Length: 157
Image 1 (tube, rainbow, N blue to C red):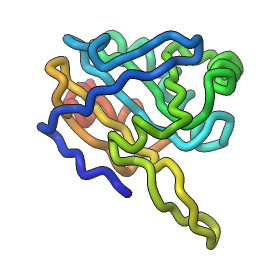
Image 2 (spheres, rainbow, N blue to C red; image 1 turned 60 degrees about the horizontal axis):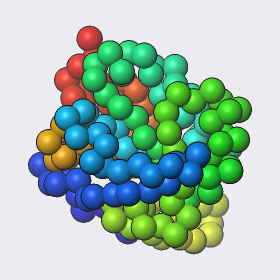
Image 3 (spheres, one colour; image 1 turned 90 degrees about the horizontal axis):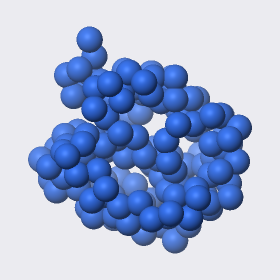
């Protein structure tokens, strides 16, 4: 399943647990622009490149009023290890039961190296301060993801 959510839609409500076992919800980000990015797995090459690109550009994104939150099906302990190993300055939600992945339409059939399986489609949702989607990035460029985000909201200067 690839998401059918589009700019202008209300972002689906979410509440999840971060790497420290603390509850994180969409409501916590009201009044801010939130980058909610979904990725397949911690510790994998492309996911690490994407997370580190966001880390390296975190101060710039924060200055633009943008908060970042990552989501994968990995558990809290694996998220903590991923954050520590890569010095990530933002939270990661553990979605082991796929509730958020399904709500945002990013969990479904994938093909890789000739085999089919269910997994996470790398997708980023930019949610405005009002809770509406500003953009949905379906073709994430892991090495240049922060620039993609800034371009999509017209703040790449």
